[in-house]
Length: 93
Image (cartoon, rainbow, N blue to C red; front, side, top):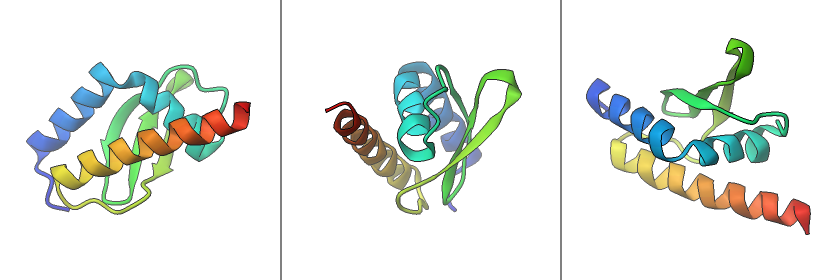
């Protein structure tokens, strides 16, 4: 993976500061963890995001596509947010 430590820090900070709701939806939609009410991203690898949940639990969520660059990460995380929204909307219909 060619995401620099600075880019990783920026991505994680952005997700935590601006997209906490998406992180919770990732847990609900991709890990079937409907009990999650708050989550913070603590890591991003080529193949997964790692969330910190209540009680210091860590939850790894596979990415829908591998990422190599910060741009890849942006595209995949946005697409996953859209997919999570659609999956969860379908469950409530």
